[in-house]
Image 1 (spheres, one colour):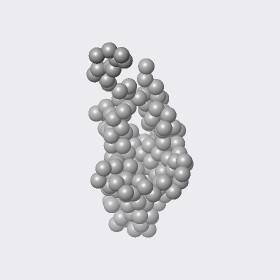
Image 2: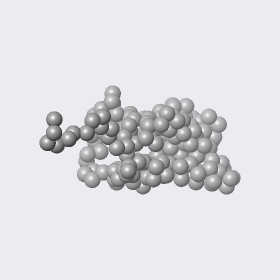
Image 3: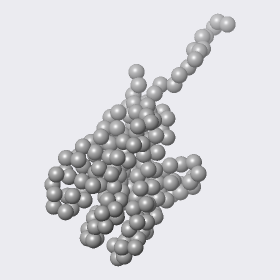
Image 4: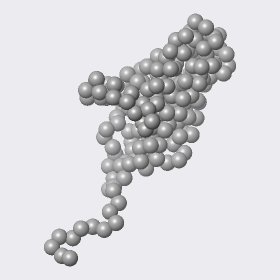
Length: 192
């Protein structure tokens, strides 16, 4: 019988929940050319809160710097670089509209990296499913669009955000059953 993985908990799920919503919000803010700076600030705050939550999961906090060492093989490293770019361009877009397109591209890269992190986890069948990438991407976009409506005073965005967050929470913490290793032949003691 397979067991639910215990390494990623609510703190890791919060990174996907908050970070995905923040990235989606940044994308919609740029696409719709929203003039208010509040959605951009909220977007950056959500991504930062998600990354902070996953940082709190690490036992030794300085180990977080190791995530920057494998850009060619690690989707977490790519996510970190996309987040740095997102924070720089997002902060700049608070003061100038010229940076919003770049911030939206960085947000899309961040969201894609999040989806690929799950897909690359081959030991968890629910995460390696081919549809997990579009699920995370579309969920982030839906949540971001709903948050933009919420910021603009429309509370119909709330069920969409709650549903997206529940899907991610459930996928990371409850549906994450480890696959038992396949052994083609079992060893037998005392016989040849």
